[in-house]
Image (cartoon, helix red, strand yellow):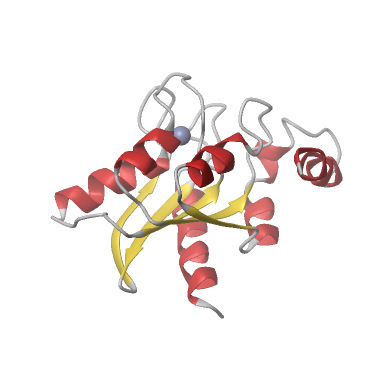
Length: 162
Ligand SMILES: [Zn+2]
């Protein structure tokens, strides 16, 4: 198992813990790593409250860690639009995160690749598709709200945005 897979599996476990408590938002888990050490962890809060990435920033700050140059693992692509909360992509850029590792793209048409594009435009290295099968499995109830039958429609989303 690679380090990317190890930290993504940790993020999945964090996401599973908040399933049923995030309204119509995905129950995302997030782990921030620097020098192979976990700096902060987070999971999506109820609607209107911070997303997983912001919770992980708060956790790292509380522990006194700087996030400059760190790697952020998130099960779902960071959001790129102002919804009930500001976009997580802006916070990631502000924190000077160096690399973002994503399990799957957010199939929400308002995101679906747009979050990745914003991060890359800011000079952040983005790796996607890490443990994507495990991520789809634990998020299947949420993904089903975008796709009536199977994950094949999600694949189509990816293909279209590429
Ligand atoms: Zn977000």
